[in-house]
Image 1 (cartoon, rainbow, N blue to C red):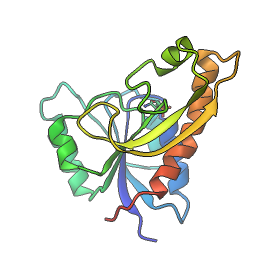
Image 2: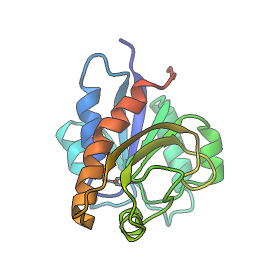
Image 3: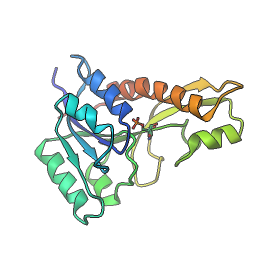
Length: 187
Ligand code: GRF
């Protein structure tokens, strides 16, 4: 199968990257990861790129040309899908315009509820009964692009921040790959 050339952006642990690498190693999964980009030089998630010999790029967001450098690399590798997996920087409008409909993100809540950060704290404070994650297209507004897929689970009575995070992330690993199989993208 011809797989779509993809790039994963991370900033931290990279456990979603790990799950995506796992899926992409299956013959029938529609993407191959050609590049990993991190805005943190010590992001633990880079270990997964190294382990699986995936080229990676560390970017310095203080460099005014950093997005131009990313765009050049992405064009060179003919990347047609960008997966944001815990990338904690907001991409510029110009960058998003350049890749319209080709950037997706995973968010730890059932959007449109709980956009932004500290989702788990806010959910528990509000005594929500359902938690989950959302995979969505990225547009110019934070966590507001078209939803591709949501996966939910019940919040238990004795839920803690830690248990909620663990359950959500487990849900994310499935949701991200499942969402990618639903996309209509080509090289
Ligand atoms: C995930 O929970 C994702 O929803 C959020 O950032 C977290 C990244 O975790 N956007 P990891 O780096 O993939 O472990």
